[in-house]
Structures are given as structure tokens and as C-alpha cells.
Length: 264
Ligand code: PXP
Image (tube, rainbow, N blue to C red; front, side):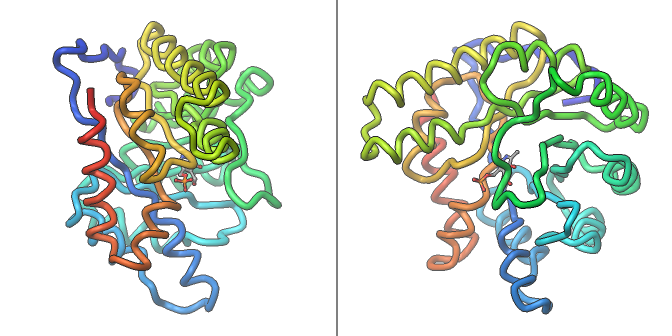
């Protein structure tokens, strides 16, 4: 999506297959466990592409616990598909985004002690600052996505802040499914799915693109896909976990197949 463009979702009869953007952070996590040069996240991205990845996503954390700046610069030079940079909304990260020009900047909240991104951005409480950050990114022609909980007030705030894309946090759905013995028809799981569906529709009504991610895996991705209306999924942990056993190429192929099978 172009920065500042109004998104119009395809009609249901022309539903396209959702794009799969593979998050390669955890390949860098293994490398950083030894502070060495392997496994190489750049090679992981190439393998993911050979498996059919439509984009590569990476999160440069302020503490640089996994992906390093040189990974980003290297990927920028070599990557043949869109590069999505997940980052906190800080001046230093904005400068890094402007220097590397990813195809999309994904703003996420960042807590130093969290194991992974724990919740969506609270845009409502930080509207003025986020507006400025998004304006600075737009001035550099960088499209912006905000990672938010499936809450209507956050979607409204995302629009007001100037975001092009909302990425809906699917973690609560994934957790509900796990806590309820993977019963897809459980009432709590249904409630989470309805919240996400309502959010997708709301995001479209406001002319933004809707993506989703967090906690998605080979088991739970199908129901999210079948909701319709999503443009991209950003998936990391489950693909990297599977690739330990069968390789990145096949792990990505398998996820693409799950997505294809569930596409309405
Ligand atoms: N989307 C966002 C905004 C994230 O922060 C993450 C985790 O880095 C993901 C998607 C991918 O989540 P997971 O690793 O659980 O697939």
C-alpha cells in the first residue's frame, strides 16, 4: 500500500490470497545466543522466499536483543520482496527507518522486560506523539502500520494518527484457543474471532488496510484466514520453530498451504 492512500478492500468474489510475511527475528535470536555469525537471518530470508514468502518482517528492538542494524542494512540491499520494519516509535528508530526505507514501518509498543510484544499500541493515550512520528515517516514516503488490539477506539485513533494500515493483534485469540483445549467452537474462542472480524470491517470502513499477526501457527491460522478481509499475516515464532525440523523453505510452504486452504 502507498503511504497516504485510501484502501478499498476487494469484493468477496475477488478475495485474493492473504500475503504471508515471515518474521525472521528468532533466527537472529539463536545467533545472538552465541554472539556469532550463524544462523544467518539473511540466508533465512532467502530460504523463506524460496518457500513462497511474500515479504520479510523484522523487529529491531531498542536493546538489539536479536536483529542487529547490519542485518537490516544487508537485507535492504539484497531482498527482492517487501521488507517490513517493526519498531518502537522513537526518534532513533524513525531515523533508522528513514535511512533504510523499508516498504512498511510497523509501529509496536516495546517493553524492555517483555519476552515478545505483549499488547497493541495504546494510540489513544499517545495520540499527539504518534501523529508526529507517523508524519515524519510519511514525509519520507514510508507507509505506516500500527499494531493494535481489536478495539474500536484504537482503530479510530489509528485513523486519526494518520496510519495507513492496522495490524490486529491475534494473540488473545491464539491464547484462548490454547487455554480451551484447542476447541475452535469454544464460546471464548468465538468471542475473540468475532472481535477480530468486527475490527477488520471497522478498519476497512475507515479506508485503511487490515493485517493481522501474533501467536499464529499452523493450527490456528485457518480460522483467521477464513474471516476474510485481511491483506497480510505476519508470522514468526511458529515458522521458525517448524524450520528447526524441516527447514525454512518447507516450513513457509506449509504455512502458505494452510492459508490457501482456508482462503474463502
Ligand atoms: N506482529 C507483530 C506486531 C509482532 O510484534 C510479532 C512478534 O514479533 C509478530 C507479528 C509475529 O508474532 P509471532 O512470532 O507470534 O508469530
